Length: 152
Image (cartoon, rainbow, N blue to C red; front, side, top):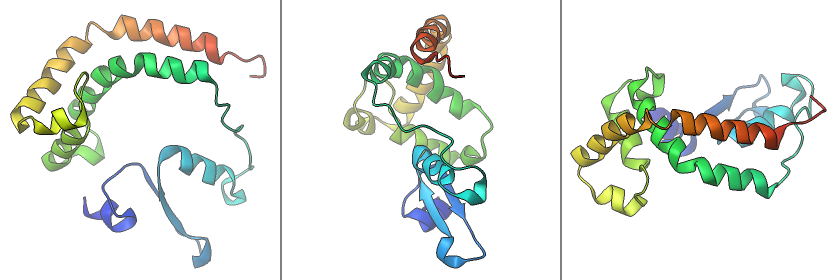
């Protein structure tokens, strides 16, 4: 917790820290998409402007909203069961569980629960998620139709 807080003022991942020989070019930043945009704009990392700008397509945001709950149920418990460096300490896992509610709970409802209730719901979600894999796979087929392009 101390390193992310020291770098950007709060515990969040990912964090990208770039140290240049020219201190005026060094920076630290959070947020995946911002990091990708920044790297894509700097010649130090290779050809620039490789990625196209966001399209703002409503069909993609609608698809994302339609799968959000199932993906949270499928992914979040697995993060806690995986060996990931950011979750080596139990405190880190506890912070993630506290700050990442499972559907259908709001953040306020989730934080009002006891430590044990939240963890029980994560363990239960893992069991429930086993039945969601086919549904999620089907949704990925739907996404494939939305993102297909003859350009690549």
